Length: 231
Image (tube, rainbow, N blue to C red; front, side, top):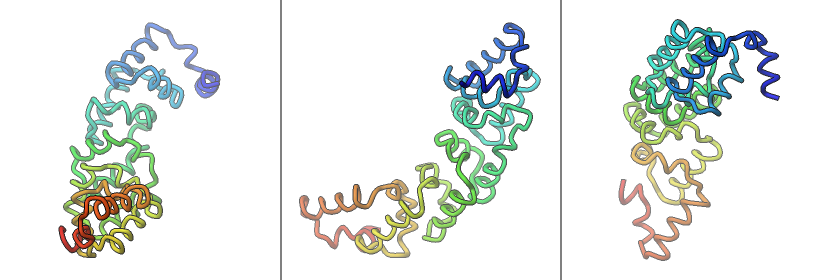
């Protein structure tokens, strides 16, 4: 039972006054953070100590810190807060700092771009940097995506960093190399131009599409070899 768990975690919330404490915080979470009822419940359940905080002296400044550090807009910050309720707690940005540093220092994102990317796909901040984000970023650089184009690539398709190397990226690359004929020196440019392709299934999307062009439309096979004809 979520209510019981919340009370067990922070029994002091039962001492709070509805008008003096709970209603102002509810108003802050719904009208300022713009969480829906389900989001408020998720945040309070995950971090009930928020209910004891002062809206003016603590919660508003913490929310401002989150937006300033991540670049996420007021319209999108609710998604981030719902995933990381702790940012409104005393620890503040500690739960996000490693990801902020990674996107800023390793990937080289500007603050506005980081805000757009995390606002679109806040789940990136829940992924392991060591096991998912950094290996994928390094792999994209290795196949030839220019560092200066990485920001544009992620703005166009933030999900690229969430794709599995073994299940998505490597099989797709192998297909592009071996069956489509994309040259090694053109892969990075192609992925930069259309990163969405790296999330497609070889069997479910790419191979049937190529077969349609060759067999149904009558496009000569050599013209489908993107690397030799069009890149």
